[in-house]
Amino acid sequence: MFKIIVHKRALKYLNKLTSFRKAKIKDLLTELINNPIQREDVKPMLGEWKGYCRIRIGNVRLIFWAL
Image (cartoon, rainbow, N blue to C red; front, side):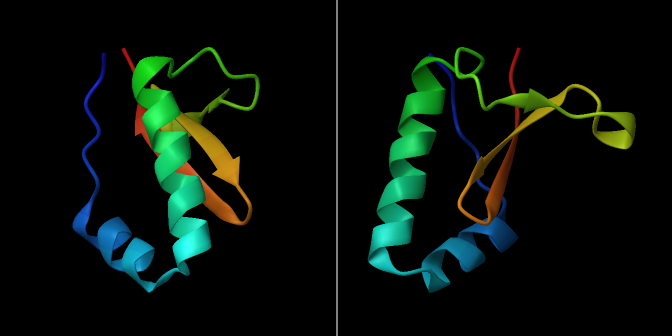
């Protein structure tokens, strides 16, 4: 099981979203806690962000670090 830490700027952005969008993002975060790399749409980042992964949900990109 993994732990999610949300940056304060990301939290501020999430609070401005509609409840439907918030629910979709929260569901995705819950799924990522259990299996962060098992999804096909998780992509490793390159360059300065090497070691992090990203996933898109609509027009929002979630960036996370998974061991």
